[in-house]
Length: 232
Image 1: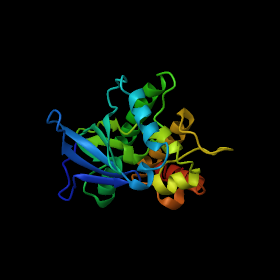
Image 2: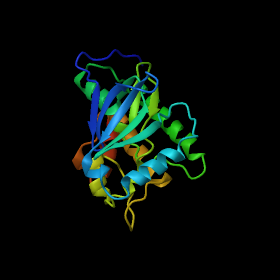
Image 3: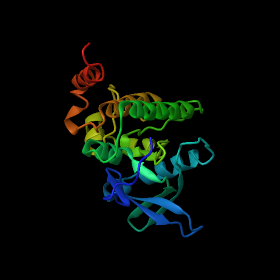
Image 4: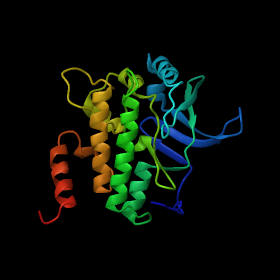
């Protein structure tokens, strides 16, 4: 898959975590992606400490296709995550452009992207005690040559400090979590559920809507399966 940047492409991206912008790193002049974390979570007790600990945990991880945070910056009430820049589109942008017909995304290309993402998570799970924790289309970047890059692996445990249930996590961050008797844990089991939701979006060629998870997910899976296998 190869694509050109749509005419209306922007240099910012916003999701439940905050607003991302492409900037020049003052330290070495390279391009970086800077996330200004939304104040509602940036200043919650325990969030920043968990974020810094998570970034340190990933400091020696080297997986091709995993975009890492370079550093965490705090200025007053503003919390920023400076991360490696990947030249591409976040998956929700790509799906949006595909729905509009600006970027072709045939089913074989979508399945190839799904395979790449599963392979990346598999490599991560081979490292002792590591998971991503917040795999969503918003945390996946597709390069111009069709390579999937998994971004933002530092936010799983920090989001756990917010003590939200699975419905709240889906509504606010579009993070799919498995059912549990207690508050959700951002572990490898959660990664598997999040992979399923992401692969489902790629199979359908669009992002999942707010009302499609978690209660209506079985109906969505059945509809996607029937659409992928017409006539059966």
